[in-house]
Length: 328
Image (tube, rainbow, N blue to C red; front, side):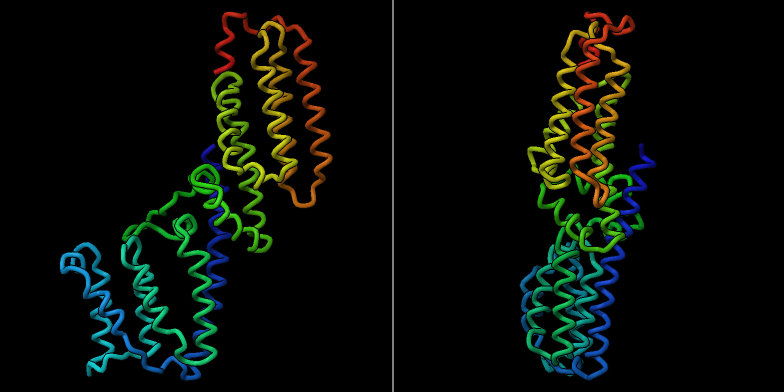
């Protein structure tokens, strides 16, 4: 359901951006205090930055990555007397200038050089601001999986990751570590962030239900592919804990047993309902403080219903020749 996917994307997007803004404002407040105290007026040499820019070819500087020439121009404007030094304040402005450019192959190195240039400069307040800025970059800007969720495409108003694709970007695509880079921020972002993480957990279960019921009939193959993918990357255990992961695998195996039985012996209406109720029971795992034992009990109850469904002849069930239509 694109509407549901978009809603999950909005919740995750707001939580991440709010957390980024909060930490950015902390850094700016620290920097403002250092600036007011005069700590940003200390001059520092910029020769290392200029040497890096001059090591690039004219074509690279002018066409492939114009931020290089732009930084060189800013250095010259802030040092009209060619002293070889600019103030810490001017250096910070140039850092911000670089940060506004997306997809620059040299932006990372330029920012690193500037960070090194400011080491030990100013006073304690400025160094505190630098530490806050460094942590902000480490958590949000230097992590590709997170950075793409925060901004729009360079030069465009379109999001780099559409809201409809946020769930796919965080949970389905990439490695466990890439997923963790986003979810760990959400877990630390207070009630709003924890709710966003719960939405991702709930959408994961919903996606399993969607895969199972894709098309007109139950499709074990789709569900099995999804579960195997998430489990092979340890995402199931990470998102739902060991008990939750085991419940999902047990339910997957119970569904498999139903799917491969002789169709004429299965009450498909009852079976489908039991399976979906089992997946819905798993969603209790995402509710803070929910009882894991209650979830286990509900899953065992579903397994029993599945077994009972196998024992109930159903005259409306498809004939044996249609067996392949069930197990897609």
